[in-house]
Length: 112
Length: 153
Image 1 (cartoon, each protein chain N blue to C red):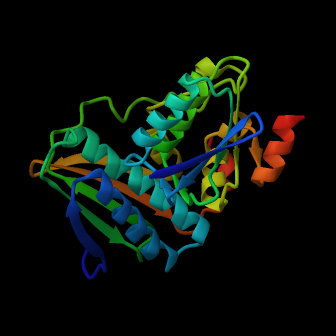
Image 2: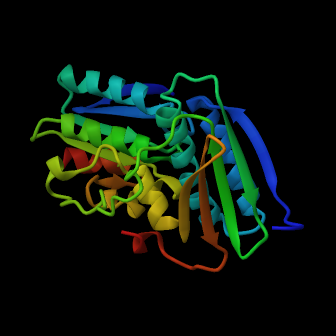
């Protein structure tokens, strides 16, 4: 899976360019995002608008990068499609990750 | 079961092929069930197929996965078969839910061990057995069960 990132103010926006965050894609995703966190990024927006399938490996990778954040850091997600959103609800992760409909709404909330 | 229609296919046991397994089973399920139900069946199938690749074959085998879908009986049935090593006893007996966490406590969040819990919760019946030196995981899904995704955990 390819990841595109760009800086918007203080936030690093990382867009997953691929339709599945599964066991095949999760290790690369985790490694790349962890590297950004270790480089000092502490406000990260994950844009999942192209992802229509997340399995437990993908979810585990998301939890792993969340745990990597500093206590004062912020990690939010946006653009969840139906199946991906259902995975968050199914596993109660919708209570863990702040979720926004779009990048614009997420960035507004992060700047507030 | 006589005169039972089924669809069976085989793929190389690699993580890249699990995608094909999931998409194929969902496509069949969508012909018989709602889209939402078909998505959950895809998820369960992917979890089991991933388990086969990672654990039964240790991710390094030239083995195959055989997937059989029985769409028309009392239940929508998905069976995933591999010829890797046997799954250790007790793997399927752990009833602790990895999703019983405190959302405010990051340390309590699960990073793994979620796949089989998802299958146990979403399939009406899930059985593992050995058959002629093969692992078989059979999942049965109700055709009529109407549940919200938030009902499972």
